[in-house]
Amino acid sequence: MSFNYNLAITALAFATGTSAMASSAIEDVLSADETQGVWLSDGYGILLDVSESGQKVRTYDYTDQACVETTGEETHFSYMRAGRLDLESSLMELRTGTDPYDIRFRRIGALPDACQSDREGHRGSALANFDAFVSYFKEHYAFFDVHNPEWLEQAARIRSKLDEKSGESDIIEPMIGLLSSLKDGHVSIQAVVGGEEGEFIAFPGPTLSAVQQTYFGEGSPMAAFGRQFLRTDIEQAILGGQGRNAVNERIKYGITSDDIGYMAVMSMGGYAATPDASEDEELAAINDAMDEIISYFNCASVKAIIIDISVNRGGYDYLAREIARRFASKKTLVSSKFAGDATNRTPQPLFVEPVTRPSFAGPIYVLTSDVTVSAAEALTLSLRALPNVTHVGSKTRGALSDVLEKKLPNGWVVTLSNEVYLDHEGVSWEGKGIPPEHEWQVFDPSNPFTGHLPSVERTIALIDKEVQ
Image (cartoon, helix red, strand yellow):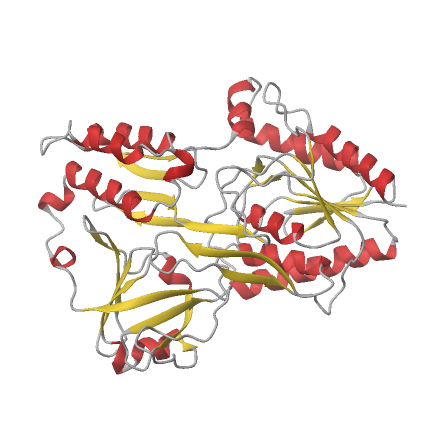
């Protein structure tokens, strides 16, 4: 999942004319008497039912067609760490722990009847699940205009062929078909049908689709693609067997024969030693690794650094920005974001600030492809905004929004994109991909196992031409 919140909060002036209280720990806010009651988020479809003592907070995925309890499950609410109320206790903002981004909640009168009704019966029918599925996309999906403007009409035609006798096997294929038509890397469904569990991801992108279709060797196509990329291209050809590992081999780095620093960043997470590491542990791990990497490059007096994220399927934006800080010479606006399903769609800025730890102010060349997706695209945006960075390679995937996860009444889970990311110039690249300054094909769709090494060599040639 890519929970990559980017909004910076300014002092609030709510419609009531009152200003917000200072931010407090979420436990303190929710335990206050003033927060007792029911709250609905602006965008995201999160409904909170806060008990009198604040010791019990029930959470729901809510639309006009569905209300599914998610208490105790990992949702956007799980990432909330702080909050504040307006003076009239009618508006509340809850903030994530890793990013200065708030979700605004408005008090509503009472828990809707749909949330209190029995889970059995109609709410568990296949028809009700299909209706809930469509309503999640209708209320929250932000990119029909980019991916499929006729999606809701298509869904309505499918709905007209269903009735109360329809079963889960009658709706899963139409759902997959609707998701496929969006060609969005953050759209998926996890379902159990007939006792068999499966997950469908709508759009893995041209390169990874080609990997699946063209590989006829032994073992997993993706494993073979990874071996070619990491072992053959990077370890052997690019770094001549002298590469170094960092953060659980999520980063491979070294120096090319041309006195150029090279670091392949292959994920935006999983950096800490333990699999369930906290945000602070992940930050500590990447900062220690970057200290080592940058110091190594500085001691070698490299003339430039290649940051290769041409195979990076994402993770967490806060880690992407932490990496970008090592190359910033001053506080820099790198992007902004707003929830496309909210009434308040004011883009709010995100900045990258310099570090006091080891840094590099020389030329940076960032290499991307269509396998650069999600939080890796956040890293792309963060680097592109810096004056010493040149973007090369192929367009990124164009799936920047955080993943919004929604639970259906029968327990199936769908994900969708509801957030609009803008680059430092206010441009959205969702569905289009972020275009490099020097653009060329990295992975050949007819043979995706080739192309990466020549792209790195082409980047090195460009550096040799531009950097003296």
